[in-house]
Length: 167
Image (cartoon, rainbow, N blue to C red; front, side):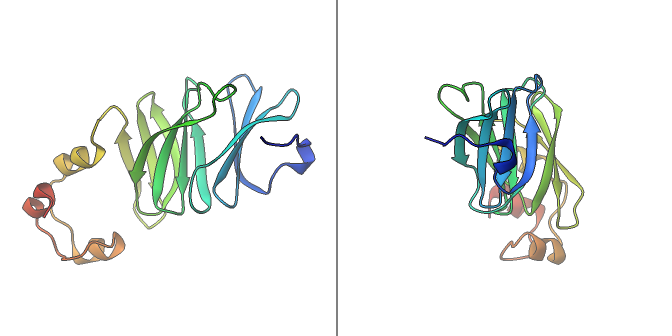
């Protein structure tokens, strides 16, 4: 159970996100935790380990049912927060991404993920059952040596055929 906290004593945080009504706030700390508080009473609702290291960004879906977190552990994670007051957050997806800096909801089922390693945006369709297969299907070329170095891919340079076959 999480102890009651006063607004001025909120954890040292990097990011905050309010729900549409303003009655719920999600706060991250520097150790990879997410805290949910009721803003009318400042009573804690839930807390959970979202990442193994610093959380770089969070965003709540337009309908308020899904929270996305981006972490220094090179993952983007989505959380079902519909039952946050009763049962807590439920992990939905873990998406590997090199140095994800922040995320924004592009639609109810699509995320834009900003990568801090020099790339621009990565668009992720959350309705795809296999995100890796989706990414492989969209590739139109192999990786350059520089890309392999940035993404820590061994046996580089890889051809497009090698990537799509998993080799």
